[in-house]
Every structure is written in C-alpha cells, then in structure tokens.
Length: 227
Image 1 (cartoon, helix red, strand yellow):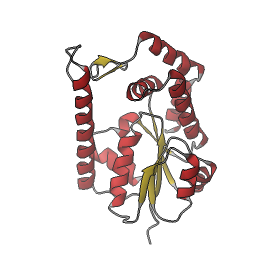
Image 2 (cartoon, rainbow, N blue to C red):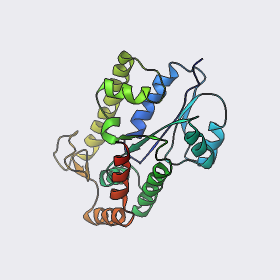
Image 3 (cartoon, rainbow, N blue to C red):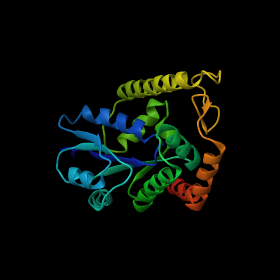
Image 4 (cartoon, rainbow, N blue to C red):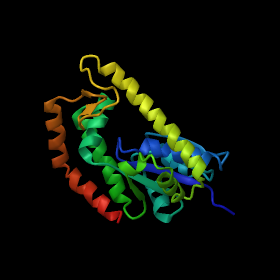
C-alpha cells in the first residue's frame, strides 16, 4: 500500500519555490483527495499541522524542531530551492516593501534552515525549478514520491509558466511608461519588467549584507553538496 504523500517545499526567497510547490501540489492533489496544502508563515503552526496523519504538501522557508525531525527520519520528503543571493534579494526587494535589514535576515534564516537539513533535503536550483522542460519537472516531482505522468507534467509546466509570463507582463506594463522598454524584458538583475527597481545605495547595502553573512559562499557549498 502506497504511503501517504507528505511533502514540504523549503528554500530561499524568490528561488522558484512557489512555482515548484504549486506543480507538486497539483500533481499530489490528483492522488490524495483529502490532502492538505498551504503556506503557514509560522513554524509552530506548521509543526502542529505535520504531526497529523493526513497527507499534505506544505510550503515554508523555515521549520520547527518537530518538522525537522520528521524530515531527518524520512517520514516527510523535503525539497529545498536555492538561488544566487544577489538576484534572490533584488527580486525580494522588488516584490515586497521590506527594509534591507529584513530581507537579509529572512534570507539568512532560509539558508540556515537548508544548512541544518543538509543531506536530508533534496536541493534544487532556481534554474531547475523554473525549467520549461516537462521531463525535468517530472523528475523533480517523482523524486518526492509524488506520482506524475509526462502529459500531466506538460500541462502543469505550461500552465504555471503562462501564469508567470502574464504576471510579468502586467507588472511591466505598469512600470514601463517612463522607460520605453519591452514589458517582459529583464535586462539586469536589479531591473524588473524593464525598469530599474533598486537605487544604487540599496544595491550597495544588499551587496554589503551578502558579504557580511557570507551568503555567496554558503549557497555555493549547498550547490556543491548536490553533486
């Protein structure tokens, strides 16, 4: 008898975790009618939710001791997404009205979570998670013991890729009037939708924070552990 689907998607902010979570979630929903899904934002609530027996696919950037133990024991499958720190942080700043201090702290904690679970979480890069290849996406999903056929993978990859392109186009349309640039062109890591979204001083703050937290080196070590 197949084990109930129990999956948590972790990872750095703006690293493809939301897209791959939604694909895993939809693939799992086809096999577990009573499955629970969601993003908690609270490690205690998440610990309580995963202690129940019903199947689930959850998304979070940090975990509590209860979930960490279930991941280490193999009871819960975990996928962790990683991305180069600078574009990750720039995208985070462009998406939310958070201070530089806040985005650096959140990113540090997300990376620390992956470091603490190294060897027990399946790490995937941003490039893998946003891949347009149904075969590659199906491999990621199946590695979590979530069944997915290639036709379903094709459907989900197309649908979520289309949603992202529509979102980028709508965001860019609002921002491009004073730039005259193509609405879906991202011309530099600190540009979104063709418009520079961060000031030079903000970029310098982010780069200084990345260096102080050793984020580049830490993410590099996580990448190396994948091989």
